[in-house]
Every structure is written in C-alpha cells, then in structure tokens.
Image (tube, rainbow, N blue to C red; front, side, top):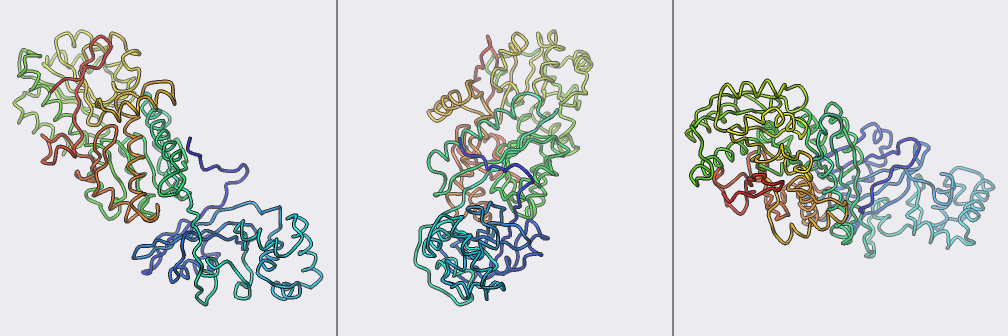
Length: 562
C-alpha cells in the first residue's frame, strides 16, 4: 500500500510552502509564517538565479523550533521555485544551538571561530562541541561533517559565507555563484489528497469503493517505484458537506499535489473548489451536477484547476430517451403510448437545466406528463411521488441519480407501477452487491451510467486486483473511475518536470486523453468535463465514454446492445 503521509502525535506540525516565479510571488500557503522569516523568501528568490540539480534541503532554527526547509526548482522556462517548510525532530537529540555548532564544525571552523560567529565565549563553544561529539557518537570533526551532510542537517542561522558547504547548498545560500558538482537528486514524494463524504452525503457504498479504487491505484504506482522517480503518498479526509471547504483548505495547506473528491452535493462541492484555486492544485472528481462544469466554463481563470471525469447529468436524460427509442424500434419494448415522466434532483435542478430537458423530450417525440424535482436524500415522500406517477400513467419514468437507500424506498413504493411502466435510473445499481441487497426489488430495473466498465483485459486485471485487495468485486463504476483518475494524474506527473508545476499538469490534462479501465478520459467537454455519448456531442467517438445501459435480470446486470 502506498504510504500515508504520517502526522506525528501531539500538536499539528508546521507545514508551509511558497512558490515563486521571476515575475513575483505565485502562492504562499501561510503568509504570517513567511512574514516572520523573510530570510526564507530571500533563499527562494536567490534560488531563481541558480541552476541546481534536484531539491536541496537544510534545517532552520529561527523562531525557537526546528524546521526542515526544502528548495526545488523546475527545469523548464519560466522557472519556478518551490520552498517547503516542515517541522522535524532534531538529529541525535541535539539542541538548536548544538546543530548550529555542528554546522560550523562541518564547515571547517575552529572552536574560537565558532565562538566569534555565534557570539558566545570560547568555553561555551567548546562545551557545545563536546556535546555534539558525545550525542552524535563520533570522535572527529570530519565525522561530524560527514553526518551533517548525509542528514542534510546544516542549520541556519550561521554565517554561511564563512563555511565550506555542499556545492548544491552553497549555490542557494551563498551570494557568490558556485558551480556544484553533479549529484543524484533526491526527489520528494508526490502526495495525493483524498476527500470523501461522511454523514448523510455518504449514503450507500459509492464513497468507500471510490476511495478503495484510488488507494489501489496509489499502491500500484508506489509498487512500481513511484512516478518519475518520486514515491507516492496520500492523505485521507472525510467531511460532511458543510465542512467540505474547510477540509479542502486544510488539505491544500499540507502541500498535496492533487485532490480527488468523492461525490458531494453540488453547492458544497462548488464551495470547496475555491480553496485550491490560488494554489492551482488540480482537483479531479466524478460528480455530474451541471452547475459544477458551468462554473468552470464561466470562470476558467479561477477554476481552471478543476476537472470532471464524466459528462454531466443532462447526458443521462439524453441516454434515457435514446434507450427508449432503440428499445421500441427493436420490439424489445412495446409501450401503450408516448408518455413519459421526469423526476430530477432538487439539488441540481435549475431553469436552464429544465429547459434543456423539456426541449430534449419534445425533440424525441415524447409527451411529458409529469415533471417533478425530488430530494435525493431523506425528505422525499416516495409513496406520494408514486401516487402522482400512477395518476399521470406514463409509459416510462426517468429517475435521476439517487443514493441506494432512496432508490430502495422508491422501488418499494412502485412495485405495482413497474409492472406496466418502464422505470429507468442511473449509476447507483452499479455498486457492488446491489442486486443481492435489493433482491426481487431490483428485477427488471433498467439503469445506465455515463462512465462504466466494459469487458476488456484491463478491466479483468483491475477486477482481480480489487478482489484480492478488498475481498469483494469492484462493481461497474465508482471504484474503477477513481482508480483511473489516479492513473490520469500519474500520466500528467510523468509528463511534467515537477509534480507541483501545475501549469504543465493542467496543460497535459486538457490535451492528452487517457485510456483507463472505465474508458477514455478526455477533459475536452464543456467546463473541462468528460465527453458524452458521440450521438450527443460532435466528437471523436474514441474520446467519449460510452453510455452503458443495463437491465437487471435474475440478479445479473445484462448490458443492452443498444
């Protein structure tokens, strides 16, 4: 399993970062932290003028506690410097002052020179030298120099201009340019933030399978040695809708290189996109509310970091209408008339969406006898809704994406209705174990997904790996999609010189299709979303997810050959 990024017990560790370009500051995660340590931003600005192979790390004891500072730069123009600061334990239990003395010892200073440099007496300096040798367990200054260099434990503040430093460190700390000898880079790991719902928003098991699919992909990446020589780590958070923006803010503040979002109500998800905007951290998700992609479409400057794996919710209605026409033409379904009823989600319903739906129904030659918005969570009285459907007597009913508990209540209330009416729903039946849990209630149900798994060698391999890892099959959608999104990100990281070079990461995501377990991911639809069925969007069919439609028969999902 890919290693989580551990948080030690006790108070939350310091973590802050800044990114700079030649044009000025790009992003600072903690303005107050860096305002109190202007020397760190000076180091970052200095690094912009130097050429250093790989990240450079040192320790800093300003402010009374010890932090590790890592400076990394892109190799492509325009160059960008990223400086990360994280709290760390002192090597060998040395005090901050002893670490400064060890740095001076490693840099070739004598005891009198150390005393003068640090403003203490020679006796005090000699005592510190003894403590360094005793605690580190070595007997010579040369051995101290070897340890300090190996542990990247050179500690500020010290007079760096008077010290002999490793070439790469001298390049960013010393004013006079140096010409470092090549040294193998020690790239920092890539960290992915996973935020999935808890509370009512987590009804059903989708969020669990999404998370497990993502973790399986992260494990695979790490087992292969990471991405572009960098190991892969993750951070996991759970959040109710109201707490989602705060969870996103906290995740971005830890310096993650991307975030995967589980399915949340549209308003909460929209609010959570803002904290990542300034940093530019890529946010990938598989939600389908049209409001999300519309927000990205109309705000490309502030939301250009958000990418949606699938087509939006309107694609389900278009697929439903296409399915009805094909079933009727094939003779597999013989409705008494041309009447349909639409139930839409209250959380995603808008006037614009309603107009699109009504226009699509009219264009397909159906009579709309009932249109009603429903709450996909707890408040809808499904028996009352079914009574209205009975009175309207439609030939077919479109039910939107609703969590499994709500879908169960609808199916329980509509047993008689479904004997004479085709009921079509979306997504939820693809969850592993759906037919076993619902039993006879699921029989005859027609459902579809705008992103799902078809039979293929890659899908079979994924299913075996998932079954081995978790002891259950992965189902037909959720797990595969978030598994694929990790690999989408991995391909983007491999294409860029740094995982935090978000400009290049975004460019790759926008321009390079990725072929995964659940089809092809091409974020070229409106608002950086996946492409819908080729009949619905004028595009290359090889870049669009197939709209898969199933009928549940004898407890199995039978793919309709439409």
